[in-house]
Amino acid sequence: MKTNQTDTSIIDKPVIEIKNLKKSFGQQEVLKDVSLTVNNGENIAVLGKSGIGKSVLIQCIVGLLIPDSGSIMVLDENVASLSRKELNVLRQKIGFLFQSGALYDSMTVKQNLVFPLRRIKKDLTEKEIDEKVNDVLENVGLADALNKMPSQLSGGMRKRISLARTIVVDPMIMLYDEPTTGLDPVTSDEISSLIKEIQKKYKTSSIIITHDIKCARNTANRLIMLSDGEVFKEGTLEDFDNSTDPLIKSFFQA
Amino acid sequence: MKKFNPVIKVKGFATKHSITLSEKTLAKKEAASNFLTDLADVMLFILRIIRETFSRDFEFREFFRQCFQIGYKSLPLVSITGAIMGLVLTIQSRPVLINFGAVTMLPGMVAVSLIREMGPVITALICAGKIGSGMGAELGSMKVTEQIDAMEVSSTNPMRFLVVTRVLAATLMVPLLILYADALGIFGSWAGANIKGDVSFVLFFNQAFSHVHFMDLLPAVIKSFFFGAVIGVVGCYKGYNAGRGTESVGVAANSAVVLASLLVIIVDMIAVQITDMMVK
Image (cartoon, rainbow over all chains, first blue to last red; front, side, top):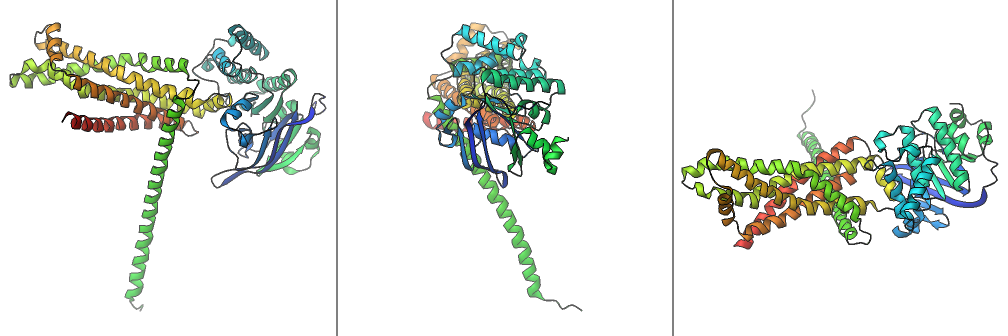
């Protein structure tokens, strides 16, 4: 399978820089010491067993969770030191794809897409908003779903619409929380292709949280494996393929 | 044969009971601590609502949508409840008033009962069931399916968009629903009076409102605003702070109804005491 590590559009300038991140919930230490860097234009996949703290990691990046210690620099801003207003400005540059899709049940597909657009891109006219919505829906291959309710969509369609909602505001960074979980292999491949397309078309840098090795192979330029609350291994797909470590082998041979 | 030692017996008895006592004390301490934590959480939640209400960028569109949802969509339920309330009260009171030879007092008695107490409390309890459970379930399911988090990461303040609009809409709509239920209750009462008697609509209303004074209406309207606020705050608090599992949606909806209903009764008791002191 083709690897993506030789992508020339990646610039060696970090957009996300995490150092010694720690996060506990009560007595349970989830992240013990996590440090990682995402370069401009790069897709990295974060692998690891369920419950290891992968989702907690990206929730800390957007300020949904507050870390116990360590620093998170996103686009040269220290997330911990930002006021609520400054954090909202930073969040406008970050797209977050939730595991469940998190589409607003009470709104149609169009309203779901217009909702963040009206709040983030306040200078757009109604015509420009409509054009942008139609454009992203065409990009995810669901132009005809404009007036449907989320309850009328299949799991794969919900993921695509959710993806459309995150890219409609032109984010610089994308955070994908298990984008292919619960989908059939064909739809999973389609979502993986979309992630690659988004990287190319919108020039985004991404963190893809997954335990789907196929998705990681298709989308990531670099892989990071978490184990026991720490970075267990970091490297290219070849490094992981050639590893003799039993944990990595068990993942890659599954 | 083992020798009986009273000191060891007493020591054993004392140790056993002191452990039981200390366990009970610790359990009570934990329960008290949980209660105080919950109370502090509620206070902080209310303070946040007040702060967000007076902040810029008020969500007018969502506020009007909620007014429609809470007010207009509750009309059928409140209409039936209000009309039946007046009808039943009339049918039940009529024989007693006939015995006392005071059947002409029927319209006035029903109007005062409905406006001062029965209309506000019963309508508020109905609203606690419909609106409170709706808010608890809706916000609870939004929490479980990460919709609130999605709102937060798209630079929208979910407290301002979801909670403030709902609490204000409930505070404004519940008093209007109560006044509407009162009016329908008096209409139902007229219908009830005509089942076994014959009284004209105009005469019935004239008699009813000749007994109603401004001080009957004012405290009822004021407490109605508090009923609305209580229903809104409890529904939103329970939904917004629901757990992560699907089970928590049911728990949030259920506890919202129970707590809101209980608080409506408590607020009513306090309002009655205050009104009583003011009238004296």
